[in-house]
Length: 401
Image (cartoon, rainbow, N blue to C red):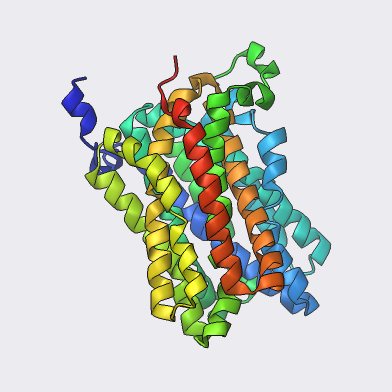
């Protein structure tokens, strides 16, 4: 391929023109909406049964913490078995778990255990799906744009899903809303089974002994994982503290809704611009500078901004997350093809776990120093950490030998 061709973005249209990707894309939309609606319905159901705000909030926390278990113990599943089979089985397991949640009389302990089971399966599904994308789209620019589209769907689903969940619960009981989630998981499984090709497992019998420790022994892979994880840990702080911050501003529920939406909207805008208007080389050039700058807007919280200025700060911070497209290009070059399922599972599990840690630390910091200081402090510490990572990660950006 000529050098000029490498500088040009492939474009999202070329990715969506591939039938197999369209099936994966549609399945992702369905499963994301299903997960979000189930989280809302389960939270309401647990609160109705117990009257405990703590247990209701725990249903959300349980969506983060078990990711670490699934990402470590089950990281190699996507490489040891045919990817399509793994994806379909994961969807069917999720549908079965939610179906049991919807059964009248299911106890609180069982509901929370099933929520944990969903969170354990999720990183295996996400990692295998990302590895499947590399089979469908190859390891070049089309793969990077495919991952970008799935991230855009995830952010958009947050905006649509919470509103849809609220509307459903206005007309349906929580258990009936959970039944809708069962249907979305089953539909996702059908799309993946009928819309994608069977491909053999990447790893043979000798790969059974290949561990996550072997993958992480590559310093290039470790640096890239940290570049994905550390900025995300600090980035979730305003979201975790949105409710008390809206209360401090006197913005009420409408202000809270705007604060929750601003970061995802900025993220979608940044990814769309970088994916549609920038070529692979340009995305790589801006990746490390954006890593260093994406948390800078959080420092503005120290100036006691108004609601409008706070929204602008969050939009700009969200747009800075376009650095992930450049990191994707380096990551797919650094990881051997036969370990991509394992690598993507570890990446997904670590990302969700570190965000849960970030939310927890944000709440602890806000208790000690207040919400504004906690967000500004996260911005300051985060910028220092991200700059240090960027300085040490230049070697990781080089193509794998």
